[in-house]
Amino acid sequence: MGPRGGDELNRVVRGINYGYPIVSNGDHYDGKKIPDHDTRPDFEAPKAWWTPVISPSGFIIYSGQLFPEWQGNGFISGLSSQSLVRIEFDGENAREAERFEIGDRIRTVKQGPNGAIWLLEDEKGGRLLKLTPKAKLQGD
View 1 (cartoon, rainbow, N blue to C red):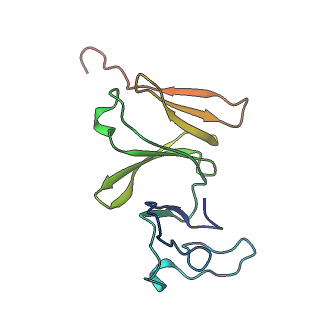
View 2: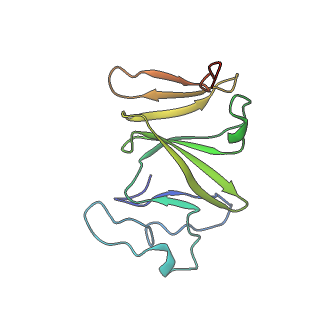
């Protein structure tokens, strides 16, 4: 979770400096500007970032069998975005591939032992949601 604007997804490598608070794709909460990453190539830029923010609260890399097309994809739960964000990786690069609007703040995301994706809301009593593939009806 970044400053005001500029949530980042970084590939963490020992000894690498990612620049904050010297650079960011957001600004300080008091409104002071922070230079963008592209102004300082000596710092490692994020692989993906969000402005406006998603307020990430949890992250998994999916390895289950229920959604084989998503194996190796990342999933980020979002507080302010009230969504689940799917991330595709391509070597050293990452990008937001899809966003599932849930309509409530998502506190965390987990993968269950059978490959289902579980979400925990932190509003409206904190619902626990289990995501599984939609069953196809005959004739579909």
